[in-house]
Length: 228
Image 1: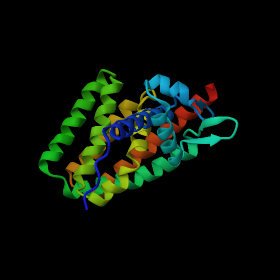
Image 2: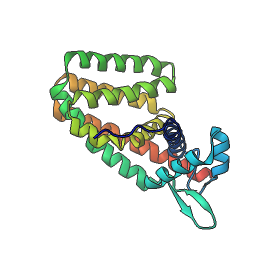
Image 3: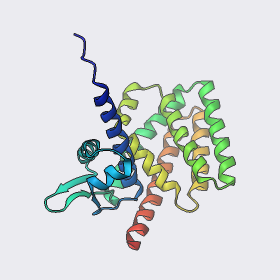
């Protein structure tokens, strides 16, 4: 049976909701909104230039992800990301990405390996320029390529609902002074293990990378909370 087409106005609303949800989620994960902050529907609607309806729908979605909660007599309160959340994120990330690296070492194509090498070379170039924005973009591409190279649809599916958290955690970690140079060295080690077709070493290199990234991000969160 044919699924009824959505009304164009419904499509516009869903699109707006998605954009608002993604932006507010990123702002929470990056620390722009901190735990305990109040999200005001009217202000968000004004900021995005929309009615309150897509804002309300985006807030419901944020509630489902545990990033905000509605408190009687207070409104929508940001739950934020705690140190425990960061530990959970990196535990999950370590399990998924180390497995992806193990399988990539066994399944990567020569073309994908060349692309991975080019990403590392570009990362080295922009690290020397201290260009955090470009390094962040390349960092995301590096991990996406490894995930694709592992040739596992189930693993990609398992990561699909988690990718935004992992990506924002990586971005936040890279803002820690000196972290981009450490990341370059860790990415080189991961690349070399995959290029050598050594799954054990690839897995180990990713685990080291994730462990150090977690430590850096928790330090950043601690410093941020101390300043609040």
